[in-house]
Image 1 (tube, rainbow, N blue to C red):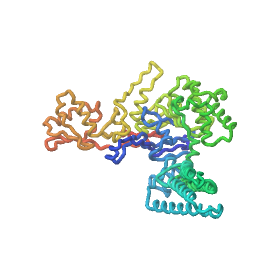
Image 2: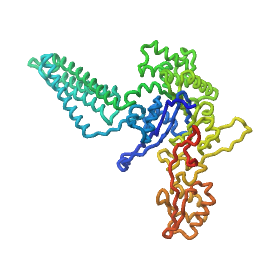
Image 3: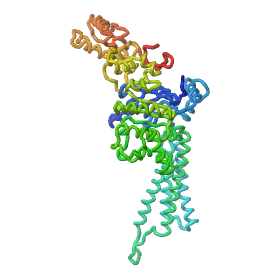
Image 4: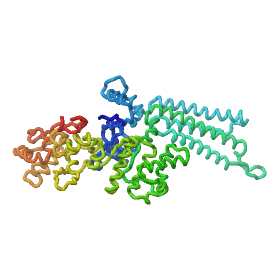
Length: 580
């Protein structure tokens, strides 16, 4: 039975820009990225446990953190609790159907949507107008107040206050326009501090500047009426900067959809349980401080008694009973299982709807694992929680998950119901993972599939199918390049009479390489190697044609495309060229 969708990812990406030296940055304009998550489509139903499995470094944890915006998403869309009709309009707009506007839907509902408006001429014109008006107000209004209220002349001290107000207004305005993205609180504080620091320095300068009168006594220039005027003007400037900053920022955030307005509320619904319960807990904080911190940060408790009551409830839900026995302990005074329960309590205290469980039992003993897993299942039934459970252990996913997604190098390569995926894996990578799961029956033997080589670098992902360099059943359409085939041919020829023959092989393009000035028997030697070694070295299957060109040999490869995640059976999706 299909569940109502709660979390929906579409083309979700998290890329990290690689560090470059100064000279390297000057030589190369386009930055290089580590493509940790590279286009993930995912649907998690309400109340479902969806498991992401795969090798270390495949992007599972980054996916979970990206959903919660603990790392900034680079692209794609994240929908949380969005009505199905909105999702249907979104899919139709992406396909070019329907009347709904794609950008409007993304702005209003996508958690990862970002406004992308560069500086334009109207921006600079508007900035100039604001600066001029701010300068006029900052100069004229304090002068008017000092003359009409305090009956003081417009002195140098008041002009400094006006300049301070200009600084505050500029800071507030700069924080409200693209491409900056500070929060209203940050911009308010910056504007206020700019005013206060500017006027404080001016005030101290006037205090310590004075003159010696005829009697030889030091006279300060600022004490008296000017002191009152300056302090009053400073307060006025601060209040105006705060108000203007808040108005400008709030108007800007109203245009930025979820990123600006609803992100704080969604953070209360979306929580995470980290992998290592000791490293994720502050050793200097007590259990009470750790669990109460989310309530204090989000302003959800009115007094100490209410905070303690909610902390005790969260600890009891996490299995720490009686909770008062644990309130004032520190992490080093707890066992591994108890620390993990504290971490779970910290996630539960805000009454979330969705939990990212990042390998929450991988650091625990086997006996404690069972207790924690039973607790997570109990919490789902009790609180209606939805889980994205991250693990590299398929046997654990078999016990816990409703559905499984197998991830490799930033993409999901197979997805389906747990029983169907484990019993009948289709993608070669999934088959390899399932084959090495330990079987408790000593009399049962299973053929293990050991993948060759190492996982490729996420900053240099192979073209075509990203699994093809390690795939035991790869063939011509999987994405081989000329460089890969040249390396395989030279490795095969090492220590044989053909070693010198293949020394001149070099790639001319991604899909072609040549052997210049080759002897007449070179073509036959290449065909002989292809026939004898193609099953062992799968890249040889990519060779499409061998032809003579200008006394040499030109070898062309089959064209390739990257496979997409496609349905091949009810509720099952696979990303592989083996399936049409």
